[in-house]
Image (tube, helix red, strand yellow):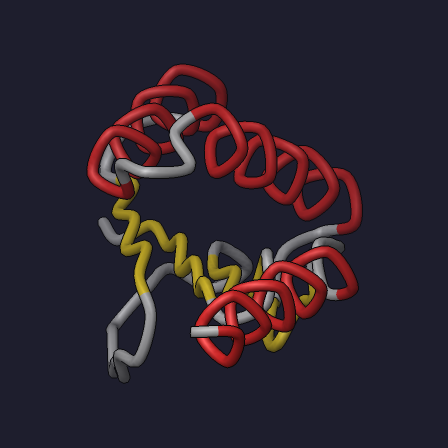
Length: 106
C-alpha cells in the first residue's frame, strides 16, 4: 500500500518539475510562437482533465487571431505527419508527457 502512494507522489513531482512548456519543433515567427505557446499552456491548465475542450479553445482562438483552418491535437503517445502552411506549425510538450500540435493548412 505504501508503494502506491509513493508512486503517485513521484508522478506528481515529475509533473511539477516538467510543468514548463518545451518546444520540440516550430517554424512560426517569434511573435506567433510566443502567443501560441502561452495559449496552449493556458488551455491545458484550464482544461487539465479534458484535452478535447483544451484543443477546441486553442483552435477557436487561433482561428480568430490568425485566420481560419487551424488544427490542434493534444494527448500522450501519438505520432503525426501533416501537410501545413509554411511558418504555421508548433509541436510542444507541457506538464511532462502531454503533447500539443498546432498547425494551419490552406
